[in-house]
Length: 571
Image (tube, rainbow, N blue to C red):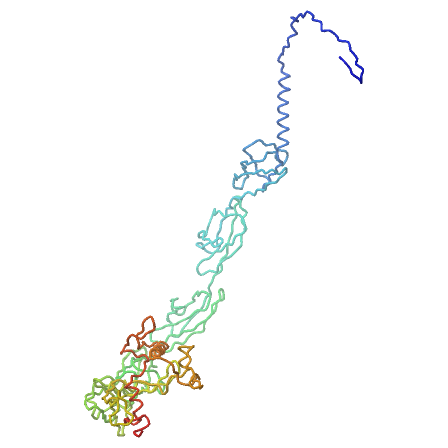
């Protein structure tokens, strides 16, 4: 080894390695041996148990199973558990819990132990039903209901009812309902109940003079007088009937348990029954001056005395008669009434018209006829004419005439047509019945134009035409953007001025629009480009007047005379 320090060099001494002889050790060490002893086993088992117990104590939960009732037996299956007083040490998980107690339903349920260190699990056991017996002290066969459920008729024994409060109702015909709230102990405990039913009737004493009358309460027979009838409570209708006597009837209130007596009832002899008819029927009838109704009718009359009957009917002479009846007698009376007649002359056009009176054919209309002095329906008919119908009352002692001129169907139709109508736009149109006229002008007339040839015109259909031209305001209801323009600086576009700058096609479309406003069939047939391509001559809608119609209207006076010019014959 050398050490250099600056310029100095030092030489260290070296130990030499010397070999030696090696001799291995052949000697054997001591052998270890184990001898079994019971104490060692006990110590091991105790150690395992201690470790396991410690692990269980550290991981188990403290569980309190709270049972109602507290006397119940508890069995927990499904794992290891340790009971310490009222608590169990048991690990988390699901266990089967069995609860047993006398008087309660056995219960098997699931016990879920959570991860909480200390926990309580309450359980309530359900009681066994109670055993009850029910009887009524007055009568058997009363119907028993528990909480509205029918359980049978008394007496009842060994009826199972769940514990708790229940509403018991006991009912029997002719008795007041018995109601009681019962508390059932349950747990198979036997309980007995005794019900006392109160009568729902009162005893009513009845007697009549003479005796032997049938007693009916609400239509049900209870016997014959004299009688002590047990009548149910409430508002009751009492009727007493005896042959040959009038029935006696009254209403009264019966209160259960409060007996009472009705004073003796004097029964009157029965009326005689008379069925009265008259010819004709529907005659008014009075008996002794009192109105009884219209025949036919049935009336009851007091027996043993005379009754004056008077019959009245419009158009007939009144008639009187007298009748006498016996008690409980039935008889009939038929009476014929005599009509009051008056002569009436009928004059009708056409002369071959037929006459009907109250729908009955009486011959040709032109005749003198006897009519009752009452309202009669007079009808005069002829084919092709509108029938005449009227109510007529003849007056005896007076000369009376019925004059009728029947209208033909065409005449009646024309009369139904309105002389003036109004459009949806507010224009007024007047009805005209045109006639034949000559249209055009003679060659010798001044101002004649080449196309104004004379020709005969026959207009056959009536038509309406407006009193004036269509105004701007009326046309703008159809075309709101239309303008009639200006001429020589003067406007033609005021609302009341006639509309101008309108083509014939636009006028036709305006007429179709008016028809649509009133749901009338359009006169003009129009294609998709709003061009008129035809017309419907049978349409009742609006249209433009033809040239002939316009000329006839312009040249015809109110008297029907045709003039040369709209203002007259002089140019």
